[in-house]
Length: 396
Image (cartoon, rainbow, N blue to C red; front, side, top):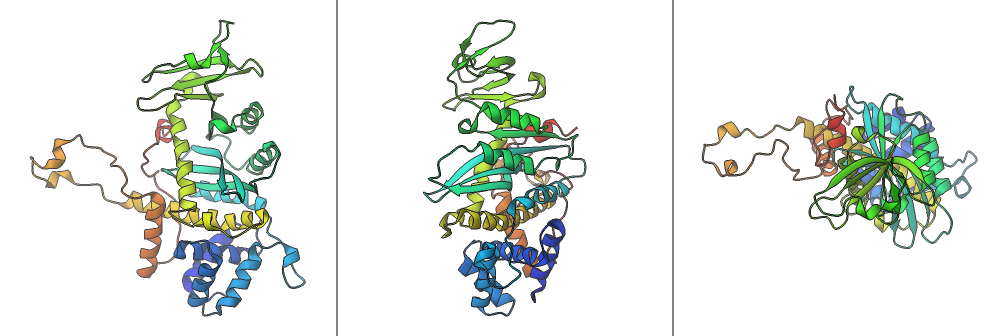
């Protein structure tokens, strides 16, 4: 039984948006994600201690309940045992994110990525990229030393999200060089989405109407260059696509990106959104939930715990965006004409001093200390982002 009013409020929100879970499963998820957010840790010991304190329970009782939440049915006590089917939460989780975006929103950016936790796990995840942050919405965890192809895993993850995003929306899917494969490109296209997959500069291409194969490395060979064209890429497995090539000053290598969009419908700068994926892992690890310190050894249990991490992350990112939208822009009119601020070009979107994720954490703590209800409100507009070319180019 939940006694703390804030935990009750959060449980109601979680149950509403993940109706596929039973009531005990939803309450367990809410309890885990609530404790993760307020302890800034995914440690079973720390979360159970907090929940026990605020809910007036014994720590060992809470610890056992939280531990059983991510265990398989065979490891639990009692007759009515069941395991959480994590994949059944992927579609509702994505729908939850979509319901919190501005009403006029018609585009969304996703990223496919893989990350490792030492020699324990490899996590394959699909993340929504928003306002310089990201939210995991589908994932698979395997042992780091497990041999075999990832193809089946990516196929299942994408299939679980099929039909959730409105058909009229534009969806781009970014992936780094290590993930590119012809089947992955086609898989993304078949889902009705648009791949933005970066490739290595080794290999060859044709630029119609020419049938001559030329080196990919020669498309842009000097920093400061950019180019986009319809091409046939690769000799071994030819792919008719659009190549977006860009080499910015200060970068060691150019971006070579393959997409099914027309050259005049896409911009290589959109690929810059993929950097938010690194922010996702930083939020899950050192900046947020300390996932890298996990003691779990079972990939299946880790996948269930990731559900709590994803819900806690969604909570912080949305709260942070709301707080950022409500912040007051600086008023330069109150400053004297010779103030030092006028000696430099004014940036209408100043760089963040703190990430949207951490801003959400601060907003949650402030709301609780001020006695305000737990909530998640729909964004009226997208918060500013260091890399938002895709969203703003389609905002009309």
